[in-house]
Image (cartoon, rainbow, N blue to C red; front, side, top):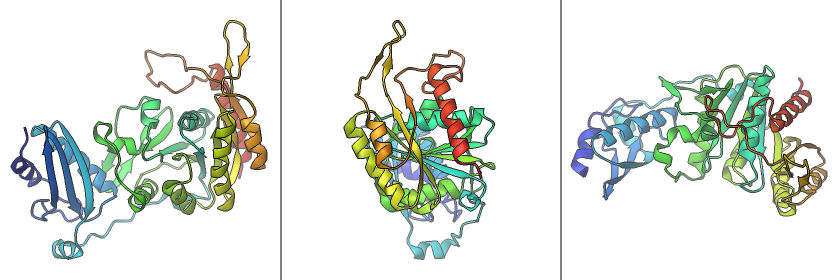
Length: 349
């Protein structure tokens, strides 16, 4: 079992990425808890919530596991200003921000009123369908607590961090960044409001995005802190609202749509997911979750239903693992191709 002394010994050889000083010399270890070889650690660093914190997190976790910890939970806080001043400047180097490219990149937020309606599946397949039509596309998995995009797309690698820039992972021609890349062992995220907003801001400012035609943002369901932060960061974002046909799902989705309208975001349309189940044997449609929710929501938000997407699994491909991605010639894949074409037509500049 790893001991507190071993933890401190390991951290002697790891530096704060901005102050270039050992974590132990900075008195950065604020809390160490060890229970049944499960290690919980709180560190103070010069600039929490940055790309360098992500890189440091990976370095610390790897080193502690090599020293014998089975599982490592990390929390970060900011070092006192006096310590930062003593050991040097913590000024950030400025890189290009995606937020400066609003004239070139169309931002599309995909949102819903509640979880479980297939919002992330829609985000992933819309992004891939746009890329199949020759567009340069990125996706931010901004569902901080429920990140799932890497798993859905079958991504096993992690972004490269070079200096102070993060390079997104490319999969199916889509550039991908997700909180899931920076969490060890699927650990729960315990950050709150301001820190979450700062992390999202880093996804825009510290990621080395290629020139993008479209950036898809898979937002958390509802109208919480993260959604509000996105609305304030991206005053000209477009939105797609995802719902099921069920009346209750459509009712709560209307709240997300109302927030978009109040913040002057343009709603491109509604996607009614899980609209029906179509029997492969008889071709008969069964409306498992009822009817009419998508149309009712579209009427309330004064927009249109972009598509009704039925229930159905992607085809299993042994060579290309991507459990939530529909092939271009799949019946549902063709629906997403049509959605992408509509989005391109609606966002022509």
